[in-house]
Image (cartoon, rainbow, N blue to C red; front, side, top):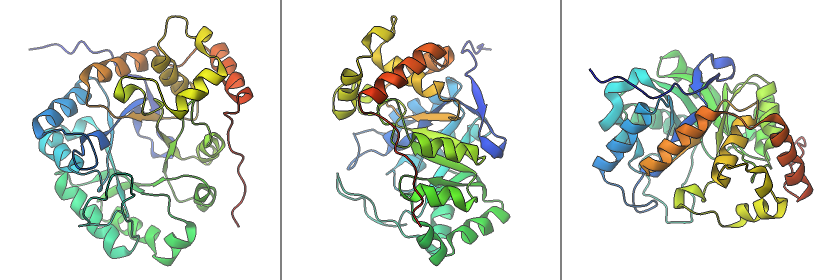
Amino acid sequence: MRRNLVPTLPTRQLGRTGLQVTTLGFGAMELRGEPRGRPVDSKQAGVVLNAVLDAGINYIDTSIDYGASEERIGEHISHRRSEYYLASKCGCLVGAAPAERGERQSHVFTRENIVNGVNQSLRRMKTDYLDVVQFHASPSKDVLEENDAIETLRALQQEGKIRFLGMSGTLPNIVDQIEMGVFDVFQIPWSALQREHEDALAAAAKAGAGIVVRGGAAQGGQSEGRQSGAKWDWWKAAGLDDLLDGMSPVEFILRYTFSNPDMDTNIVGTLNLEHLRSNAEVAQKGPLPEHIYEEARLRLTAAGMAPQRLEATA
């Protein structure tokens, strides 16, 4: 019998859900394939998904409109369902053709579309329940109320098809979404190089919600094996190189994300097994030393990368 020699990844409680999630999660958008993503066949997807679980990661995030992602989860790891928490999204238009590159998928928050979407996700991923279902695309409070969308998810929760209600939220709507007090989990974009939602993240955590960070590896850098683009211009402007102490910039960014006490899991997507292994090793190292984290925050703020202050939308 082969021994599992992978060290246990750190975990945090996902807000009031009580779920103990690994601080490193997996974003399954990379498995979507063409036309919106890079080519990836079913065999490769299976290798990646099983490697994710073998690394000890226990939180997987996907979506109806992530191409073949849900089907590949169902095909390759449904037999390991007890090993991971599964989060998907709703509001994505069921049956819609993939949008062109650079265009956003359509989202409709009617009862019919939400119910059809959740049922489709269950079939695709060969599971009886989803741990978290998040409203995709940060719909406004008015849109949710006009469509009785919250009541629809609660009815599905009563049926046992979903466990917790979530929101993939962004400014400005996230202010009202937090105040509604109905969401158990928020998925929020945040990293050292993308701090606009930092105050929103803190407010959601203070309200008792679990926090799922996306973009916490400064996406666009590691996934392509490079550090370039607008986000990495902030790195240069802040002058962080002397804080690395032997770390790569990507490791530093990941550990900066893990240093946020309000974050519960940081979902990072990759098709590269070496990146996956490296991410898990970084997660095992945990947060940055507190003085390094605070110094980096000060330098980023001085360079102009500061949180956006929250304002009521009403």
